[in-house]
Image (tube, rainbow, N blue to C red):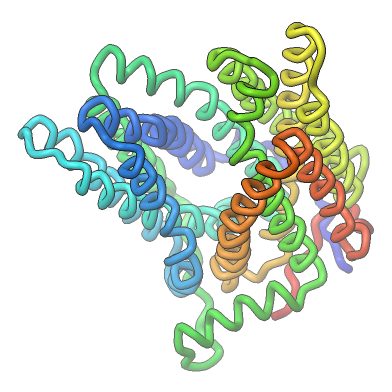
Length: 420
């Protein structure tokens, strides 16, 4: 497989990327404010019931399943930069309705459902367009550095956004916190609007195709490519078993390990710190080990670190050390894997299929997550949370087989795009 070996210069010298990156960093922090702020608003301001909180959560997650595939088609048909700008504008306006309705005294939980669903749809569209746009903003040799910087921003947002949300809600009320997020999307929009590098037009369609035909083309390309197919199966396996931790983590840490809510928050914060570390280490690790070996090492070592979570026990000091180490090392290596997985997928996918290639995997993983959550609940009722989490870690180790029996392991650098 042919590879590109030219050594890239730093993206610190790329003014257009820096505009995009700065806007995105602000927007990511704002998004984390809303992630925590909307539920707090529902509880503190509207007195939402548990059922209403469940409906609010579902309203925000449904768009991934409902619109991802079709959104991928439209992202491939259009220029991605205007799509991102339109999504940012829509996100800002949708969130702005929340503090406006509150100040007018007409805010209701039904409005939060609609806002959660609309922002979920727009966030899916933006995410697909952003991943498809990055290879046209920077050279393909810069993809790892670009994705590393974006991952760094996401890690900063994870650490700062949640803390800032709590502070804003406590000092200024939840509606004002949502207003801050609305303004953050305007910052992202302005950063994208300031980019001067022209975006190439979408590739002309080879024939007049319906949306369903284009959907099938995207799915066929992903699952006919040995590289993309392996990456998709790894991500899907991780989504299924990762849901075990999503469902059981709080229950296990508080009931089984006896951690306080504050201690649980600290362990999660260590994961954010690990993501920061992973963003810094991703490129050096690939230069030393090669791309394929880095992906396999990050996958296996992350699973090994995560094993500390179900094995945690003994004195509370030891429990905390094991949990902190699991989150710091496990999330850090997961970040290394994610950065190189994203860069590899962008590198091998022709530009005209970037949106559909990502949306195909997004829908698959989104569908497997709730299935895994149901399995986790049933297993935990029978075997207990600790044993169920041990099974999940075993699934993480098994996911590495998709890489072992694929061409990915032999890659030393990012290959050129495959023909569709």
